[in-house]
Structures are given as C-alpha cells and as structure tokens.
Length: 321
Image 1: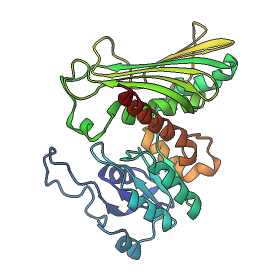
Image 2: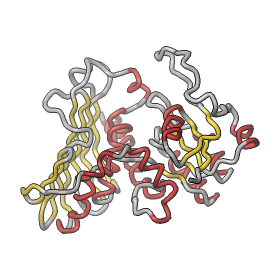
Image 3: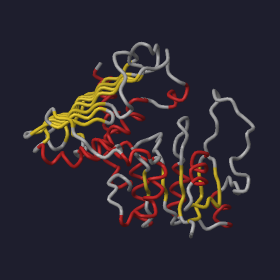
Image 4: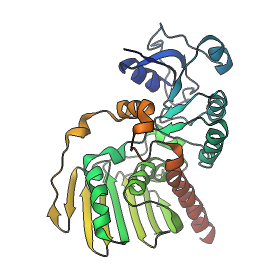
C-alpha cells in the first residue's frame, strides 16, 4: 500500500497521522508553546523516529511532504505565518480546527490558497452527525426557512477551565464555530445583522459563559441562538438542539435524534463511529471525488465570517451600553 508523506504540526496531528495507515509522518513541528498555567512534562516526543524541526525551511530542505496536518491545541492559536509559508511552498493543509487570534485571517489564508493554487482543508466534524446528515436531506421539503432556534447547554465546573481564557469569547469562538458549521451545512449561513449578548452566568463567576444571539440571515430567516457553558437547566449533547421552521414544515434535532413535523425520523447511525479526524484525513486525499461540503476553507468561510460578525455585533452592543 502506498502511503502519503506528511508533515505533522502539533502533537494531536502527529498522533493522528501515526494511527492512519495511509499516512507517513516524515517531519514534526510543534509551534505551540505551553502557557504558563500548564505544567510542563518531560514525556518526550510521541514518535522519536519522526524528525522534529523548528524551522519550516530546514524541514523542507530535507523532506518532501505531500500535505501538512495541523492541530492547534485548545490553549493556542493557529500559526498564520507558518501556514502561509506552507501554502507558498505548494503544500496542502488540513487543519483539524481553526483557532484564530483574528478571524479575518481566514480570508488571508483563503487568498493565499487561491494565489498558490494550493488547497486548505478544514477538519470540522459536527455536521457528520448522522442526524444532521439526514436532516440536510429533508430541509428542501420545508420550503422557505423562516426561523431557526439553536440551544446549547452543558453542566460545568464552578468557573472556566484555564484554556477557555485563551479566547476573547469562548462560546462564540469555540462552540458557535461548530454550531454555525452545522447551520451552514443545513441551510446556509450568512448573517446580515445581529444583536449579541455575552455575560458570566452561574456557576461561572468571572469568565463569560453565556451567549445569546438574535440574527437575521441573508435569505430572510431569523436565527435565535442561546449557548450556555455550565448551564444547570439541562444537559444537551455537544451538538445542541435545533428547531427549523419553514413554510411547509419543521424539523427538530436533539443530539442523535430527529423529528419532522412532530414525527420521529429513523435513519442509519452506522457512520457515527468513525473518528472525525480520520474521516477528514481520508477526505484530504479523496476531495476531488468527495461531496463533503465544508471540507474546503472556501466553503467554510461563511462560518468564520459569521463568527467575526457576531464579535463585531457584541462590540457594537457594548458601545451602545
């Protein structure tokens, strides 16, 4: 079996590449220094046989990767300079999750991808939930979408975990990232205007853990989003609960369950067991024949633009206050 030589950037990326039978990590980089609050450990490199580099130029002088797999840890942000350099070198990128210090950098990466004719892939996975896949097939039967209600709440500790503090707005930049991707997959997502509220709510004392968004979408539908990390009223699956109302019907999604016009919908759940990163890596090599809508950054930009629009809407709300 032929394997694809890749450069793994970040420990999670290296671990995933080592587990995939079609990939051969030929170089490793870790540009994500540990924050002060995280104790260092001398566990060594995951795979000492994989050469580690601190310079991309040095790495590329010794190896010829077909692609780069990047996994920024939750306490860090994408190294944009490194990723632009990879694209300049003609090396396709699969980033398992965008963690951007500035969400406008997604456009910069896209511009470089177009300029260099080099693909940038995003390993988003919530829309691979079988209930979401089946719901997407049913959305056209709803007619014009009028309103969407998205709710998410999970119990939490008494205050934010340290990694959450690496975000300006952890709900918008971390959870909405996944949830907006689901909406883009289902109905398309282009926010034309929004009002956003973000606050600390019990049990959190200082860090903001509750976000409410009222947004108008370009197609005329209204989105009412509520996300609460540490909420005690109920416990949702990470995907949350979604109600979609259209002129000709409605859909309800909650975790792995789906209803159409009040009737339970039965669907094949067999695809849910494949780890999302493995599926994303497989799609990396099969993208020319893949129908995976959100795989390419170009198709994912509505998500990054919506996050940026919500951050701007939140700032406007604060200014008015």
